[in-house]
Length: 298
Image (cartoon, rainbow, N blue to C red; front, side):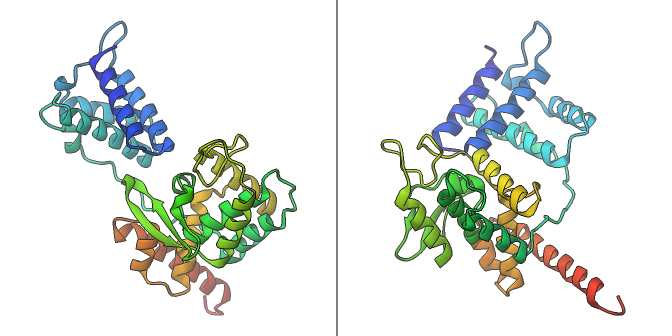
């Protein structure tokens, strides 16, 4: 195994020890495998870590541009490489993190697609009605109530443990990106759905995860995406919805009802207010749509 391949494995092992989300580890592993393949010649070895310079990394980034990848994909791949080089810098294999000097590709500013309050309520009410005769209806309803009622990411939902729930005060301890923790309140409907699910929760021995799969072990974020997609397709005839759609809906509906932007920032766990401000653009877009539809002079 080459020195670079060894460092990639060591870096991924470090992420696992730090309890990074399975989604992050999977994406970083894929991106770094492609990075290694690009620099490995046929029947040869890739450069040792100390031999990488800005020119080599710029050539690699140009290769990504030639593949017509979306800017967000290139940004993620560059973030993976930067994190790898940061790990190698800490390990003393390189003198500086040259990946930090590479300019990040600009991603277009897009307004997230957000279901309306009526659509979201119809979806959650449809899950509650159990009209689809699914195997774990109480679990699925609790998942929807926590995603929409708390604005959780899928990775945050699957990472929840039993001792993260304060049922008496209705607070959740949420572990977000970068292993940052925050406290999030949840409402009566989410509390009722969670209590109903926990009353029939069947876990494998010593399993502390809140949400479980059919084996009684922690559910995966991929499973959560599949569950949301299934219900959205069956109840709304819209298979494009995903867990993050409910997080977008949570923020946008709070903002529409007068919640303070900085309060929403805290609830979502955004480190920058500018990330939260995209929801003001969603509200403005909705406002313009209402104006165009309703105003006689529009």
